[in-house]
Length: 343
Ligand SMILES: C[S@@+](CC[C@H](N)C(=O)[O-])C[C@H]1O[C@@H](n2cnc3c(N)ncnc32)[C@H](O)[C@@H]1O
Image (cartoon, rainbow, N blue to C red; front, side, top):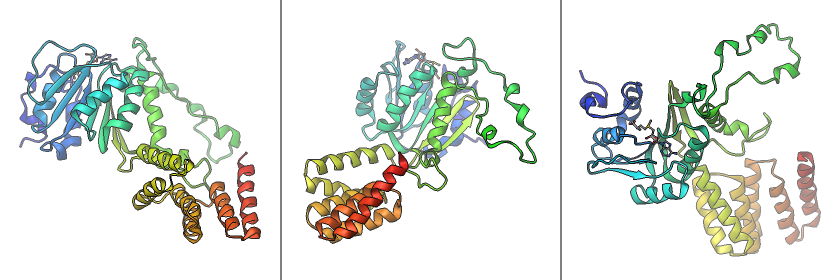
């Protein structure tokens, strides 16, 4: 029985190395659910045009866009577009995205320069601004970072990864030795994707201490790594836009456009609990003289993050306005102690 979308295509017809390097077999597993959907796919790196033609047939209802510094002089089928653009040209990438995928791409594949620093520029720009939540961003050929003859690559020796220290049982190592980092390789594409692994750990990265709450979750739902293929699924919660909305609300608040600020905070709190949103709501209500509503919101915010000096400070300000000076003082002091402990 035929299995996998690629088995239904005449693969000889496409001038691309996606079959030889076995990527297509992985893509088959990844994209099963999407085949008959009107997907929007952007590929960085067109070369002879074989892969974007393949994607056009792979997704019969798809819109396929390829970008490259050099575009081959051929006529592409309907729904398949090739555009000249450097992968690091953020402005042009945005123009292309606005034209073909105003709501964001479902799939973005980087098969262009395979240079870590360029791949990183395209990644964060496209990931934040032009990839749908739940969408896939795939980085091909990340192994170039292990090649001495690649422009930003360097060879490494897996066999020499610190096995001197393996025999630590029973655990009698001085703690300072346990804090020594493992040997690692971080050149070119390999260094870039290892940074992306840190982003996957953002929940813990932003805690800094076991006992602290996370400041934010990862922007990624998951990462899957295969030889040569690095696959990121974007989280359903779009952290970047969340932060932008929070900044907007805070700007309105500073300019005392309270209705606008309140409107944004009220929308945000329907989507997700965040101490900063409760604090923003409290600040708006306090400005409007609705002190009880301000206190209610501060209580919710502090329950979520009991370590935020800003909530305690605002609590002090609200109690002060209510004439409750002793209580207010107590919270001002508490806020100050949190700030001093963090210094
Ligand atoms: C591996 S080929 C792409 C192959 C194609 N995706 C396929 O599967 O048939 C890499 C392409 O990236 C292009 N390229 C290199 N640097 C680039 C950059 N900075 N911006 C855009 N494209 C770039 C090259 O011109 C080349 O055509």
